[in-house]
Image 1: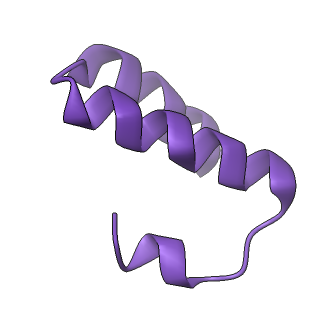
Image 2: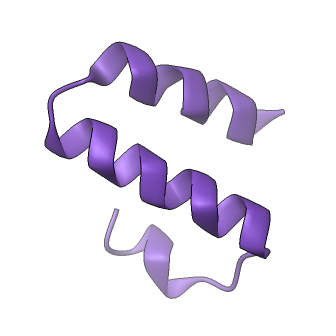
Length: 41
């Protein structure tokens, strides 16, 4: 996550990456996976 944060992202993607980091930190991997799938598309 630290390396991903060093790239330049749009505000929308930055917001999703912040959510992703929170979910991973709280071990909510199912929720995190949903965001990863959204970012992949």
